[in-house]
Image (cartoon, rainbow, N blue to C red; front, top):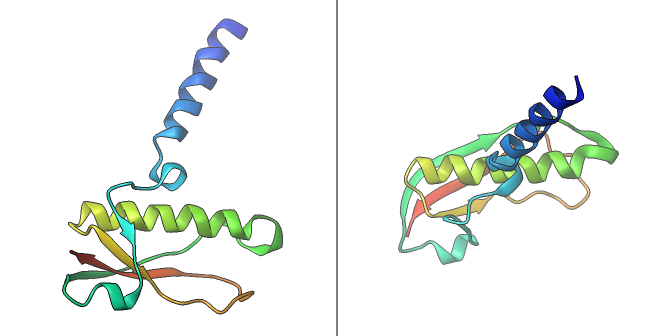
Length: 101
């Protein structure tokens, strides 16, 4: 049983490494609003984190930001401006504007 289980676990770990939520998107840069004046607006993008709270909340936001970057890339953007969040505030939606620069 161990011989069968090990390849399954290895495959699951490798599949997780390919998840854009974990690895991000190197083809899309994060910019501020004043850096995209000459860029073409593509779309508004938003993702709801799958976990919240003081323990896993930060990881959920990071995963969602990475998913958002990959989604913007697939839609033709190479630059993203994340909406501002008040420090310490709970984040229930990660949103941004995507641009082609």
